[in-house]
Image (cartoon, rainbow, N blue to C red):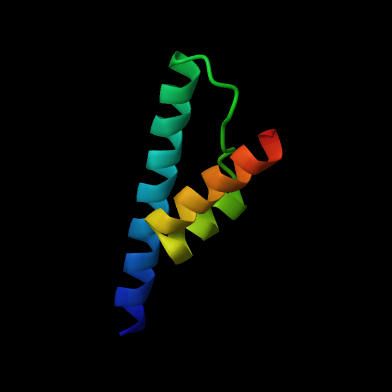
Length: 66
């Protein structure tokens, strides 16, 4: 039971970091100055919250950019 939770967490975390890297590259290609850094906090946020967590990270980056 705990193994499945750990596997789900790691899957969401690595997928979330991959999405962050792809979106950052897309934003750089389009000359936008917003980006989310990949670190342990973004890894944990993506792992716990999934795609809504990744969106929240970009929302916070946009808020601090303004």
